[in-house]
Image 1 (spheres, rainbow, N blue to C red):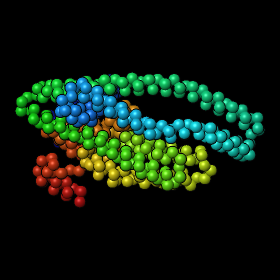
Image 2: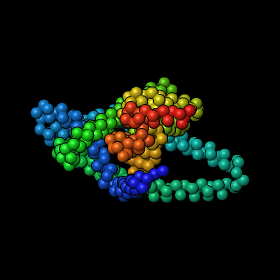
Image 3: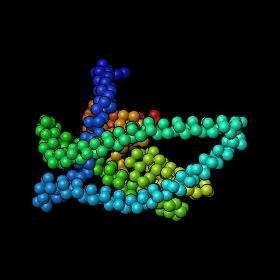
Image 4: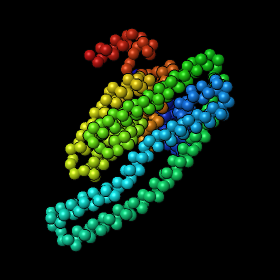
Length: 367
């Protein structure tokens, strides 16, 4: 039986989570750039600290770090731009293949449907008109979304700059605002959060590199054009857990179906991407990222869904490490330690400092 105090505590926690969820949804335009900026600042902080130890002023260190980052992304874009331009030049071939496919579809409709040729032509013309209208309706939102993305990216860079510049002041504020006896546990908590985020995203970058290599190698062996472009693009979508690889694998499959008459290469590509996804989920990611983001699969998937509903693609990227940060917070709170156990991968009485009798009761219950 729950005591009155327990009921009051859990009711307050549920109300707080509901308010927090509403805040995350309604203030997403403000919060998304800030969360991304915090992550980028944590990832770039070691570089800035390294430069500052070499007697380079903080502002110059941050600007040099930004410059190196832009050079890195510029090199990646240059590497893939040649294949991307070649892919655009082949659009005319795509159009010819699409026209051939449409012609075959029309012939099939003419021979199988009990409609006159004039009625079929009318249906096709109406469908074409609706398609053009739909394309025009989607164009404005797409341009608007692109503008919002560029504005958010610029705002994120500004936040990153100031978070890096004033990182010592921010840390001092957090520690001073806590009682003296709580400052050391607070610092330990912040160090764990910093470690989790750095390990997660740096490990994710390594996983993307390995998967991009495997994807490209498989596509090259199968004989798919632009293997490097398709392979690393699909690997880049790994930042969307569980779904990204399959979305990326659909593009080379579609490319083969448009450019080739035989279907087996598309089957081989699909099978190869499924194999790479299996290796990533069961061997590559666990060994590289490890158990630093020790959130079990159930709540990781729930975080993925909730993040997608609240923040879209950004939420699908951010909510899993944010859930890992919540787990660290729960583990450091006596009253919320049970939630940390619920979110974790595996219960351990030693990890959570629980009596051994609890482990024995759990073992007896599940036997």
